[in-house]
Length: 542
Image (tube, rainbow, N blue to C red):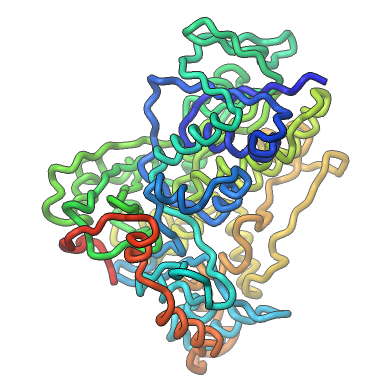
């Protein structure tokens, strides 16, 4: 039987994550090559990546690919990420809350949220069910020197140089059987049924395949320009459409620590990410061009860093939040920016590429006749996940109580809140979020209703809770002081002090004694350089 042929058009993080994962999953890391994988990468197309924060699913990808964690972290200048710290999202008063990756919920029934709502809420919610907010504030690593001795391990992700990550996966994958061609795509040939037959390069190479993966970024050279798949814009619900970014080197601006988390600080017309790596920080002001011009946005970003950064180069990156109506059309699958984009408030940029590759491996069409059935299910799963992310990011904005600028007043208006999210909020006015609020399953033989861009599956899109369950919704909602009025109605205004479970207190005591400072772990284990301490960024909140 002839091996299926797969051609990935486009490199960067999306292309090489796809190549590496499919080679790991389908070809057993190159040891059992059942699929011929070729990646065509343009030497003339610049990469967009500016430094990336990830979520814990990245560890699954690395495990399937077969990379060593320490080697990966050294090569990509990676640091640990245990949480996202949200600053000034509720009010412009230097308040903050954490969305950590690990929490402790009592079994068999999780009462953490209800117990907190019934208290005076004098302690932030996540500090009652997770040790990671305080571990992050202490600047501690989620790993020890030597053997782990703290019981259940802490969950974590990475913050890394995305360009070095792509290069690392390229070298790792080509050494294990993936073919890499450095050339520009010149022409696309199609079969009579509209499927792609081959792509031709500017070096006269003709690459035929059974399946093509479009990783060409926002241009979507295959899925949009060849397959004619349209785009669904999320502008109504996510107003930000541009970022101004800057790298801040440690040799001049080392703040004395490497934060083991990503920071998202709300500014006048959006928010700024702050991602620490081993030699620099990546910062980027995600903002709306309808409310602030480029000059003022750059000025505000530099003010966040503080004096002395005037000579650091910056760049503007326009983007359009939304998704392709289908991720898989015919024999073409879009992964990465070619399939859609949602602003990186919850670090889902690389995650969507990761998920696209994982689902493609799971739904790989070993027989050509199976493509239509597998594509329909693939599209359904990806659509659900895009809308799940849209709702979750939308929630951060619409729950704000800021009124200091027109931007923050606008994002709270009902027309800028998705109907699904409005329905959730209305339901949760009758009870707090719980596990079974997120359910959905469908296969092609089941009855249909309506979903934009679908071919046979016509149901409305739903939030499956596959990425964020009720625990994450509670984290954001209670961090943003939601359900405040409902609590007064449910439980009265005189409520007992907030309690922290003794197991949390014991774990915190152990963590304080056993977990080393994050920077020290990076220096001793990965060889991160030591830098002289400079002034901390002006926008940091302790």
